[in-house]
Every structure is written in structure tokens, then in C-alpha cells.
Amino acid sequence: MSRGQFTRWAVIASGEGGGRIASQFFNRAENPGIEDRILVMNTNRNDIRNTIDRIDASITDTGDIGENHALEFGDKQGAGNSYYYGRQAAEQDLDRITSHIKQTFTTADAFLYVATLGGGTGNGSIPFVADQFKQGLTVSESEPWMDSVIHVAMAVWPYYWEPDQRHFNAVSGLSRLLRNRDGGQNADMVMLAANSHLDGENGSDYDRVNELIIEAVDLMIGAGRETHGVIDVEDLVTIPRQYGSYHFTPAVATEMNGDIYELEYMFDKAAENPFVPMDVATSQIVFPVVRAPESMIDNGDITEPEVYQAFNQWQNKHDLSVAGQASLTPKRGRGSDVDVLLLLGGFDLSPLLNHSMEQYEQVRDNLARGNTAGAEGLTEREVQSVLDNLADYRDQNEG
Image (tube, rainbow, N blue to C red; front, side, top):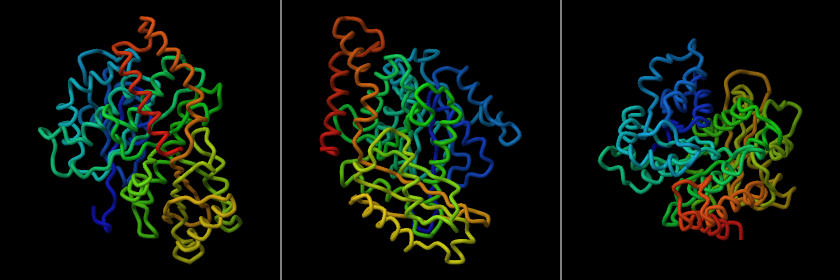
């Protein structure tokens, strides 16, 4: 990827939850980082239809979406909330999935996989498909540009009130996005968001959560589109790979008056809004992205050195010493509203996992007693392997 070239992202969303998020990408009339490189996949044609129905037909040709940007895969009508069946469906149709991606995107620098971790279809298929691309096992249908694609996953944790099986799925999905079956790295970067943390423990407003996710993705993608201190996707994965810590969560603060507030204060406000429960002080890597009106940047009201200086001051204030790079990226228009994204990486996962590990253990114990409810198609050995891979990843980057 040339440094003078805008990063070309492509979105691969699987499952009903992933489709809900992807529908908002279609609704954006102007998204130069993604353009029309979007594919929604599902094992159920009705769920694909629901995704298309959410799209504003006045903005996007929904007929074209149904024909060229949607794919039904597998031989079953649904995965039954079992990630085993979701993965199995992707295994059955891997060549067709790969071929459709090739035809839909033509070229891309980075894939953004989108899935909700509580379900079966997206949670089963996305880790598998990402791993197949990473290992180069799709050669029969791939093209040279696919070999250098960077693989980023956006994974959404279920609400805390959801059934045990969904939390079992979530723990398994996180593990499988981080590590493949052999214990090697899977996705190059895993971004996490938790429904209950963004919408309240008793909430159920998926649209609100999805809007926040899209906002964070826009900020991240925007950082690789202009030349004011660019953080590109290559930067986002190179440093974390050195640390072995490639799980992240966005923390966002928007529309802050740049004429009134100092950048250090803006970082503090963003840090108060991570997308999962976590302690910011446990972060090992932080990528700050500041998005300001073009007029402020052109007039020198906010500069790249000032962003770095504020980042260093913020670290010193909170007794942090983290790896990372800062970016200043413009947005259209005048005014003084500034947006800040902190990509927080390598943090202690305990506050998030504590909401689900008891339910995970319950399903695992049931499986050991011969009750496969919630773990259909899985063996005790595979379930234990998933847990061991997650524990090993955490030991390496949190210990």
C-alpha cells in the first residue's frame, strides 16, 4: 500500500447482528474509505432481507445490494444460535464466499469483519473466514491483492441479561478471533464493544449501540485518509504485533469545542467512554485520533505536534507509559467542534469476561455431563481448547 494512497477498506458482515451494523454503512451516502465495498452474509435469506429493509432506498440502490452485496451460505436456514453450525456453513461454502468477496471488492487494503459474538452465524463464520485468508488457504479463488490484506474484526459482546448460551458463544468467539485452532494469531486486530456498557445493563437499543460503533469506525478509517499525521491500518497492527496484544476497544468523545477545551482534557473525556468495561490504566497501547475542522488545521489552531504533546501530557497525568502513535485528521466544514478517538489496546480483559465466564463454565459443565444444549456439535476437547487459547493469549499480554 502506497503512503500516498488512501486506505481502501472493505466490510464483511455476517449474521443478523453484523447485518444490522452493516446496514448503517450502506446508509452513508459518502464514505470514501469504504465506498461500495460491503458484503453482508447470512445462512438465512430472511435475515438478509431484514438487513436490506433497514437501508434507506433513497440513498442506496437496495436492488443492487440484494444482487451484488449479499450472500446466503450453507445448506441450512440458520445456525440455530450455534457457532459450530455457523462455522460449518462457512466451511461448506468457503470457495463461494471467497469468490463473492473477490467479485464484490475487486481490491482492498483491509477487511473489516463485523459480527455480534452472542449469535451463531457471524460468530461461527467470521473467525473461520478470517483465519482462512490469513493462512492463504483460499488460493483457488484468491487474487494477488488478497495476500496483503490486513484483517480487522469488530466484535460486539451480548447484553449481560442475555441467555447463558450467548455468553458461551461470546467467550468462544473472542478466543477464536484472537487465536486459531493451532494457537496462532488469527485477526490482525480485534476491536471490542459491549452492548450493556454502551446502552446500560437493562438496555436493548441496538440502533444506539450500532450508531456509536459506526462513529468509532469512521474516526478510525478517517485517520488513514489524509496527511496530517496519518495513522494507517499498517501502523495499527504493527506495534500491537510486537507486543502480542492486539485486542482493542474504542473510546470516543465528539463535538468538543476546540476554542474552549485543551486537547489533554479531550483525551480525558474520551477515556471516560470506552466501549467495554475496562481500566484505562491497564492499556499497553493507545492510538489517539483527533479529527478537527479543516479550517482549524489550515489556520494552525491545532497542529500535529500539539496532538503529540497533549498525548504525552495525558500519559504523564495518569502515570501511563504506552506504545502508540497519534494522528490529526481533518473533517469538512468550519466551526470548532473536535472529535477524539482513543484506540485502547492490550488492556486487562477481566472486567469484560467476568460478565460471561460463569455462563461459559455452566455450558461447559453441562456438556461434560452429556447435555449439549448451548454447545451443539462441539466436543469437550474443542471447548477446552478454546478456553486454553484465550488463557494463553491473556497470560502473554496481560501478565
